[in-house]
Amino acid sequence: MLTFALAVFLLIATPGPGVLSTAGVGSAFGWRPGLSYVTGLWAGTNLVSLAIITGLAAIIFSVPIARTILLFASSGYLGYLALRIALAGSKISFITANKPPGFLSGLFLQFINPKAYAVNTALFTSFAFYPQNIAFELTAKLIIMNIIWLPLHLLWLWAGVKLHSLNLAPKTQKMVNIIMALSLTAVVGLSLYSVLGQNI
Image 1 (tube, one colour):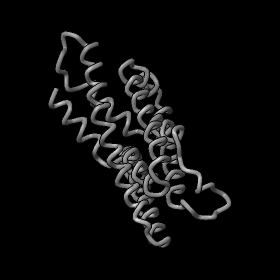
Image 2 (cartoon, rainbow, N blue to C red):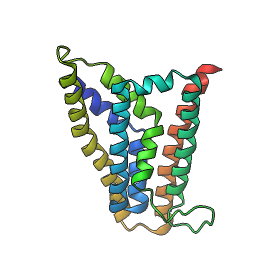
Image 3 (cartoon, rainbow, N blue to C red):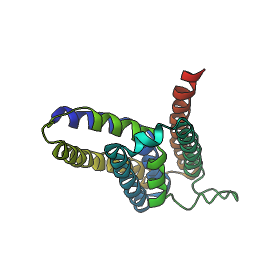
């Protein structure tokens, strides 16, 4: 059980789309919008967990085109989210950058987030600690995962909000937003490279 908890901590703490976008939303828009976004991420994470546990995800991903659709949908959406973070406060007509991503944005991100599926698959198909009662083990894993997941994401949100609350000069805040957005874009690039690079 302790090994499982450590695995959860390491897999969730590692920068990925969820935590990077959480910090970015906190930095660009503040605490309240960030909480709404994190709540959506949390709901999405648990829905992905249930999809893994029930085998629904395995059925969907057994169709080859489904993986490709997920990859490009997640990459496109993460790029869009990165753009919203980078342009927070800007007056650009083609995007409402002043409107923060909320609950539905977080929920949708986890639904198409490849890392969410990879992490949940690793956690729920490995680290057996109570094989004689699989229902108990899966329930315990869900509880442990949530106990670790929520504080970690709130910590990332706090870090972003702390940057937001420093009352940085507009140019400096804009630079912070751009760095957050570039970090998120780098994750997208690495994700695309890891998948497409294997097929070249």
